[in-house]
Image 1 (cartoon, rainbow, N blue to C red):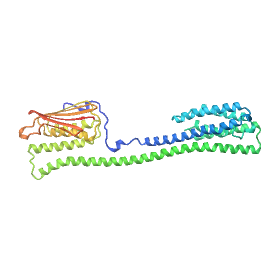
Image 2: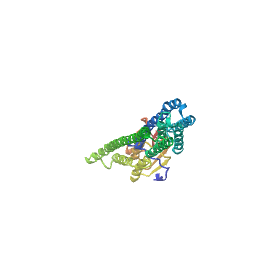
Image 3: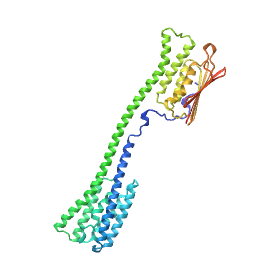
Image 4: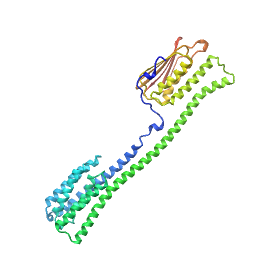
Length: 396
């Protein structure tokens, strides 16, 4: 050939129309399910912390205002924690994690200040709101991090409470028992929510990944079945033409010297070669299939020029077949020379074949006609000296 496709335009990736090519990456459903589960848990944690702080902590603080040792300090601490929780909640609901270290430092400072400012008489009352509230805010600022960090923070909270008890002189066995009960009661629920959210999110992701893997196996099975049907269809297509010619030659009904029989043999061979090339995994399947047909014609002694302009876009197998079949059939009848041209763009592909008109002694070719099946337009014309065959695909 006078034009080498390997030196042509840069190839574009091949698109496989099989079901497997339509499957999303395996981890996408798992990530989406895990994200949805985690978002639900975040909403629940933010709601518990802020509602508890506002509905339980604030009325208790206002109701015991006059009995607090330093009510201004306790109130300021309540406002600081409310602002910290609002910021952390906004970050969580926006899909991001709050900065843990500075917020933890703020919460622990408020914890120590409120325990010191509550006074001995109100240490174990709702007015000392850090007992029941602060654990939920620890959950917010540590969201998405490892559980040991939450345990360490709750341990620091318990240590601050113990120091406050010792500082206020509340060291009686009853006070220490109440302290132990408060530590257990106010820590167990935040730990359960924090751990449960992590476990549920992990299980949701695992189950979604399992379901995605199952669907991927089913998609691969469907793709294998689709490929088997495609192979059978290609085999049936080429066998229909080849078997008829071979049967005529075998029973003596066809003469190998007859030009018409020779053209039918060439056409069957060209279709077989094109169908074999159709299943090859190459960057430019359309050009690869046309080159296969041109190579066969050249081996049969037909001088042929193949010119490619532009890079064909990814095309389904059926569209490529309709673009290639008419020029392949015309090549089987070509005599003396042929010129095959491919002009491609992102939205249009045109395949043209120009050959000399078939000699009258070899039979006459089909008259001029135009066919359009809605996907590929096929035009065939003749003027007595040359025959022009063109197929055209346009993106709709």
